[in-house]
Length: 192
Image 1 (cartoon, helix red, strand yellow):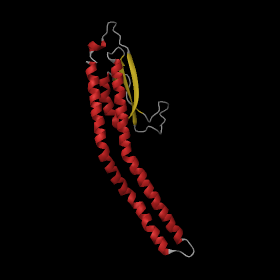
Image 2: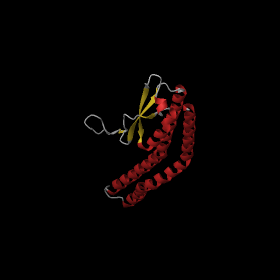
Image 3: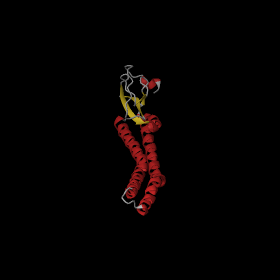
Image 4: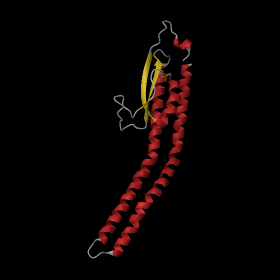
């Protein structure tokens, strides 16, 4: 904010504060977009790693790749209700982008794991066939071939399914980024 904006009639400006925890890959979009809703980085606080507790530096296991961001905003800002609505819309768009990015790999992981488990079942059948009395060698070979294929195939299957899903989802993610741009543009116009 400029010096003129900081000086009010009484010389005091009241701030409201916001603390958010975001994944590291989305820090830039939050730092670039929140000023469009009247927020500025809180100069009294620094970003901190979410994985470190303030008590005795104890490491937390969850939230290892997140950062905590601190913002402040003038309490008497004009169009506060509309800016808050736009900010919520922005937050939901970022959450949708996160969900879309996660969904790229979810289905591929499930299918790959199922194929790997099926391959393991064939290998187990092969082991039981060879350890039977008398050993059934032809059944061992018959079950081992799809078993080894079930162990090798998931890697290639995963890569193929992720590429297909990325081709489907990337246009949706781009639409969400365009929506974020529009939201931030509207918020920026309300500030001036």
